[in-house]
Image (tube, rainbow, N blue to C red):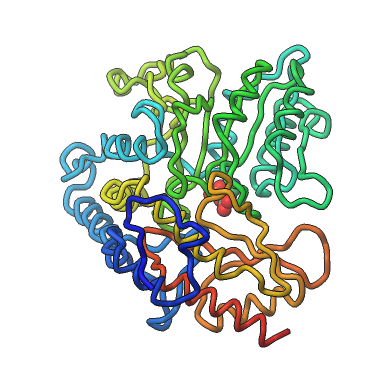
Length: 441
Ligand SMILES: Cc1ncc(COP(=O)(O)O)c(C=O)c1O
C-alpha cells in the first residue's frame, strides 16, 4: 500500500484510506512537514508514547529556551538599559510578533496584538464591543461555552449594571444533537434582530471540536446591526483563519494550545481595522495603548495608537513573549495552509480508523469545514476508566464530562497536531483506543 498524497493535497478520499500501517508510514515518508517534529521537546515518558493533547497544552519549541535565556542574560547584564540596548530591545519587543501573528490569523498587522490572557481579553473587548443602548441590549452566547467565557460574559454584563439573566441569550444544539446548526444560529440572530447588541461564538467548540463558519455568522450578525466576536482558543494555529476577510469585529485567543507558547502564554486579540481606526471607541486604556510617539511625554490625555495595540495596557512581559516568538517562527516556516492540509489528512485517517467501534461515537462533525484537528469521542460506558487506560497505554489525551449528566459516559478528546505528530502515531493511537475498548467490553 502506498500513500499517494503529498503535502500539498488537502484530503484523503474514502477509497484511498486504509487500515494498513504501511499506508500511514508512507504518508509520513511523503510528508514535507515531517522535519518540524524534531524542533519540539515532546513530553514523552517512553519513545512510543503519543502526545495528542496539543489542543490543551502544546509542547515546547526547542528555540524557545534560547530566546528566554537570551532575555535573562540581557536583563542580568543590562538592567534597565535593556529597554533600548538589549539584542531585541524590550521597548519594541512586541512588534516582532505583529507580522507572524497577522499571517497566522489572516489579518493585517495593525489588527493584531499579543497581550494578557484570553479571559482578560474577553473582558477588555466586551467593554468596547458590547454597547447596549435603547432596545439593543442582548448578547448571544452558546450554551455550554467554555466556563470562563460564560463567567466573563455574565459578570461583565452585570458589572455594566444590566441583568445578565435577561440580557444574555444562550443557544444550544437541538434536542438529541451534539453540535449547533449554523442555520439555527442564523435564525436566532434574525429573531433577536434589533434587540441584539453582540454575538460571541467559538471558532471551534472545545468539547465537540465543531468549527463554525466565521464569515457566515459574522455576516448574519451584521445583517441585524449587531457585532460579532470570536473566541478562537481552539481554532488559532489549527485552522487557516481569514479574520480580516471574514469581517469579524474582534477575536481573542490563547497561545498555549496549538500555538505552543507555554503554560499561561501571552494571549492574542484581533480587532478589525475599521474599529482600529476609530479612536473614539470606549475602552479600558493603559499607557502601552497610547501612541508610541508621545507615550514618553507622560501626558494626562490618552491618545490611542491606530493599531490593535491601542487595547494593550502594560509593557509586555518579555520572558513570556519570548516563547511566542519562537513558536510563531515555526508556524511561519511551515505555513498555516500546509499545516492545515496535513491536519485534514491526519484527522481523516484517525476518524476512518475509529469508525465502527462499539460503545464509541465520534461527535465531531465529519465535513472538513466543520472541524479542525480534534476528534471528540463519546464513550458510553466506563468512560473515565477507559481514558485512564488510554493514557496508561501511552496515548496522552484528555477527558471532558459529556455535560448531559449520564452516568458512565464521557468525552475523550484526541488532537493530532501537524507540526509534531505523525501519521504512524494516528495509526497507533487508533489501535490503542480499539484494543482498550474491546478489552474492557
Ligand atoms: C474556549 C476557551 N475559552 C477560555 C479559556 C480560558 O483561558 P485563559 O485561562 O487563558 O483565560 C479556555 C482555556 O482553555 C478555552 O479553551
